[in-house]
Length: 83
Length: 197
Image (tube, each protein chain N blue to C red):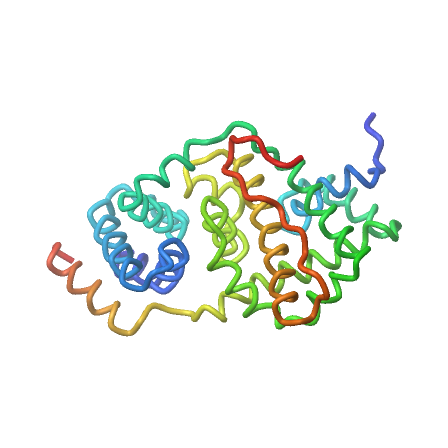
């Protein structure tokens, strides 16, 4: 039976996957349990979460949509193609 | 549902993705127009109820590649990209920043605008995968399908892209006078070539 407790190296190999929600439920629980008790690994988790949250925010920094003049151009092209 | 009801609502998202790939307004416009034309002509192949946004992103990526022959080379490279090694390299970078106090410098930056700038300077093949997963919230599997690479390649390029962004943030902190000495950064090597451990 596999050891349910992860060591630091194993937990940190999975940190990004954990933050991205890409782990199985079992693996996710193992990483979560490790972070709950490891004073060395938890700061890595905090820092990378801050980083990823800020990266997601760049969506609003870049602007949310296409330029106003692009939509009519796309529609005109589609209508020429038979839309 | 019709093409207009299903696909056209994603125009803003497709534009944002095209803009991140091209880094050029005019080229992004062209890519978006080509994307929707191709999508319209292929509408019969779209499976109703499936992820239209992901389908459009795939078409957009292919439209972009048609104009960038050299980028196809990145799409085919799969060997020697190790996601686990990149994950640990990211942790080592943060540990190094903790020892030097540089992690606190990054916290003093206005992060989202700094990251938007860094993302614009991030080279391919890392930029498109970071945009898909971290900005457009695609899963690893969806990003792999859009980019036409294995999930392992997505993982490796994503983790390295994130690390390159963090190193860029340190350079910005130095340029802003927040750090006393310039940080050491990872030489960027193309996937498949020998690089730092």
